[in-house]
Length: 183
Image (cartoon, rainbow, N blue to C red; front, top):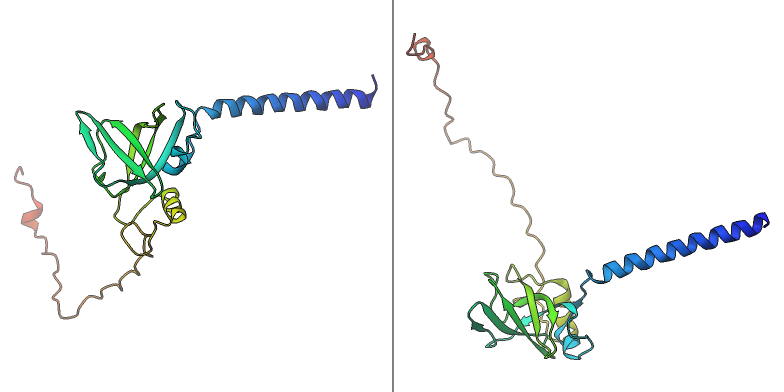
């Protein structure tokens, strides 16, 4: 075999090993990667039952039902609604009409069995994906509750000490105060 032939075989084997490694990595990551979806995408039934997904939107008013430790509610983006079932303690800020992100498994009846529910942490904060989905559907209104956060306020000017306030100096230490009672 010529030098050129050996080089070609070596490069071919190297590329084959690299392709195999990339394939194995992508297969392993496929089970752990969860993409963000809107209720419209989930309701379109493009996902197989049993697939894991992350869905965000608003909790529809009047949809929260508690059955023991299980809570059922509807998440909407204004175009479609998806029923979510969650067993466990909900975040303190979870309530109707507020933004929420759920992560779980899509059931055969179209319900998402969530294993985690995240509620927005501030009256004006909303995850970027949820805000983008609401803007796309036309349900986003600037300046209202759930709108973008305002720019941070400018820090106040430092307070200068007033000359009118008396200054207090520490009391002088006497020789008697320095002696301990044991002496």
